[in-house]
Image 1 (cartoon, rainbow, N blue to C red):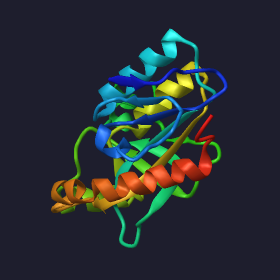
Image 2: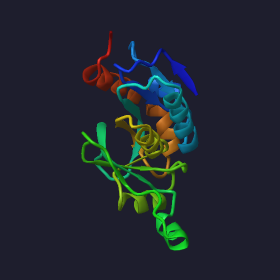
Image 3: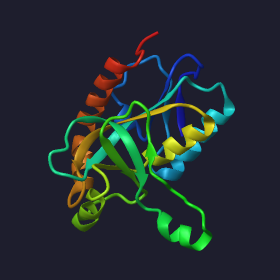
Image 4: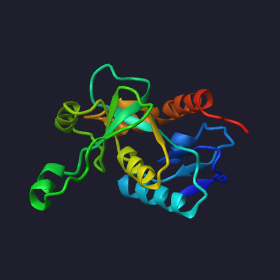
Length: 194
């Protein structure tokens, strides 16, 4: 976890997983780098929000794999799901519901599936494509942490690759271009400079 800048209640907090995704951001807004995966994302954001002061909003910028053909570019996420937690099985065991889909205010039509597994197999991509359009490793965890703290969140993902065979190689090759696109989105949609 690395926090760059000072959080104030009048400005949003930009949250990204790794420095490669943030490399072209040129902003006075605070930036939190959480590390990859749900645990790093949730614990980093919860720690920062628990310390106070809280930001006006959380904006998660990051890369995502496309689960369906034709999905490219930058997308504001409307719904986020957790793909690696079997909520139905847990409900039969405990009678409680876990990991329900989360609708995000001001979101777009993209559905983001979050899980700790990097989707690099075609069969896994095809299964997830039945439920979502994009896949990442942090979005759902960040949405839960922000929601518990009462801070609004917006999730913005730029497609880095088509999830499935070869995705890890493609992510390494495309992350710089994705970081440029995310920086352009942030400049156009956030109070970028004070």
